[in-house]
Every structure is written in structure tokens, then in C-alpha cells.
Length: 177
Ligand SMILES: [Zn+2]
Image 1 (cartoon, rainbow, N blue to C red):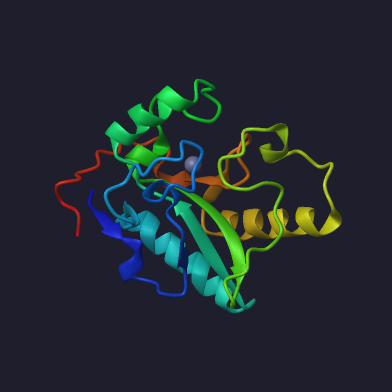
Image 2: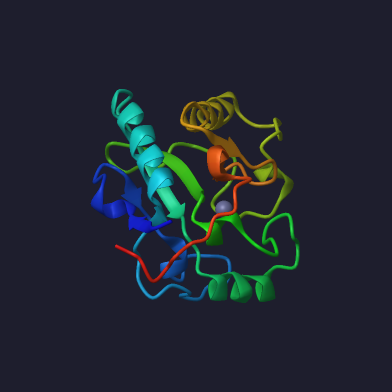
């Protein structure tokens, strides 16, 4: 299955690919560039999420998508908690995205934590939060769910594309377009 660059299919999405910058928990640039790849079917599902958000005057923020295996190996050196950095990530299968929401001015909606926060506040069931934050997290989760993305229980920002979750996905990263 081929990976496609989500940047080429929907310009309303705000891309903030953190591992292409030093603004991530390792403080190192781990990606060669800030492209945003997903398997084609997953990329079009994300396109549908943004089209739905257009009606609400909101934009999807993507923090991470396809993650090359060598980067996953690198991340494991920085975080040994497998709830957060797993052995084989669905990111490396091209079926997962790390996302949040922002308004049309690019201002982030209030959410429980920043990206890659390893505290209990990142737990999707953690509810000791302000009403507005809970509402925003619920909005993100319900819109993603509508397009078949399941929210991870330890990271509110991480979603796996359900239809391909249990199928053997072979990512052909030589076939990136
Ligand atoms: Zn993730």
C-alpha cells in the first residue's frame, strides 16, 4: 500500500510535524523534512475529517503521522514506557495520526496536555479537567470516530485507523508520492 503526502490533498489542515523540529520531547530533529505521510485510504479519511471540521470553522492540527522504523528505534532510547513509545508503532504502518484542533487563526483549542505529555492527564479517560477542555477533547474524539479513527487510551492525541488496524499492512516507503 502506498503512502501519500497529506499536505498535497488538504491545505486546510495545519501541519506542525514536531519530530521535524526541536519542539518535541527529545529536543532533536528526527525527520529529514516536514512531509506528512499516511496510507492512501487513511489520508483520505483524514481529508474527510477536515471537511467535517470546515463546517465548524475549525482545523485539524497534525503533530505526527507516518514514522519511519529507524525513528521509532531512536524514540525508544528516550522513552522506555511502552504505553507511550511502543515496540512496533502503528505510526510505522502508516495508519496512525497524532492530532489536535485549532481555530481558523491557527490558535490551538484548549486540550488536556501538549503533544507527547507522559503524565496521567494524557489519558483519554482522565476527567479532572475544566469543562471546556473536556468538551474540546470530546469533540476531537467524536469527529475522528465518525471517520473510523479510534482514540488511544493513554494519549488523547493518538488515533488509529480502525479498518486497517488488524490487517497486515505493508508500507512500501519506496513508493512515496
Ligand atoms: Zn501517536
